[in-house]
Length: 400
Image 1: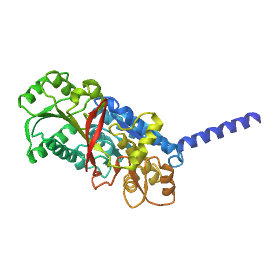
Image 2: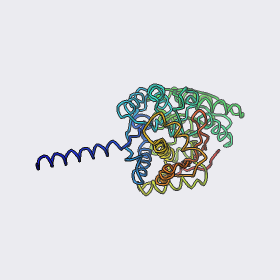
Image 3: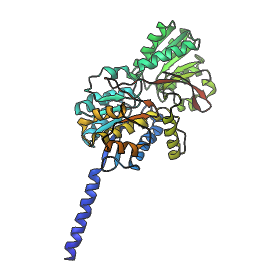
Image 4: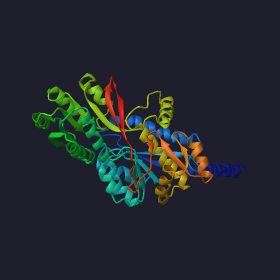
């Protein structure tokens, strides 16, 4: 009798545990953890983890907890396909936050997510090519396309009185997208591109490309590449060779590793563009306070705001859908991101969950601003102008 009672108790406990586990819901976090932007990643993982923490500490996801499952693209197209495939087919995630690089985001979408009917929301992918992908309303991003950033950067450069530039951009979706847009816009506004060189990643030396660029005699070198790969090497080798003293970079180059590798003094006359938040955004302040309280470090790192927002929005979409049904994610994501609805900001999970339970609409406004998706899953946005200030970057202007 005692054995029977004991066995029944164990069975009940196991059943209870299984039920609890079954109530938890996984969310895919596809990041370029290794590869050319590896130095960007730790604060972004913190941001994503913080979003999950805010959900689990304030009511949980659906009837259980949110379980983050990471996939590493290795910064390559094949790595992105493999990592996304595992999240979709092995982990059975209903939605994916990521990837980060444009090339890895597109590769994962086209070969894995779209065929499986899984929504992807990238916090950082900016390639204009994403707009035209036939994605069945499954591919989203919460930063503006490089068509916008390239045009803004062209105006920034001319506003600085720089009339002639040499340009080099990495030969991938990101580099070609923003590099081509910049060149076209700069010329249209009256600037002169004295040399334009497309370069490949993962080379040890870019001195041949720099020789071509410097001979043309530009007043500055525009570099569209990643600081952790070709971008950082190009800047360093240009300085070592005495070829350029002023550099203009985009978001891929705005990495603090560039400052630590090159030195602030050598970058004193340079400036950088990157997607940013609107001025005087209370939700940015709200997130930064939460982030600093959690990690004892400042949140003013590239794309922390957007990574938190994209993760929080993915979780809101699951809650809005009422289940982990992949077919419901796109409609739910659009619903939580746009008016009408009561405003919800970073960390306000309990409020959002209660409103959804009451059948009321919500409108998430994040640290990166508001996110009203157009028919292509794109958003408008803001571009900041940054300069080096000691060991960090300081934003000195915002363009809408």
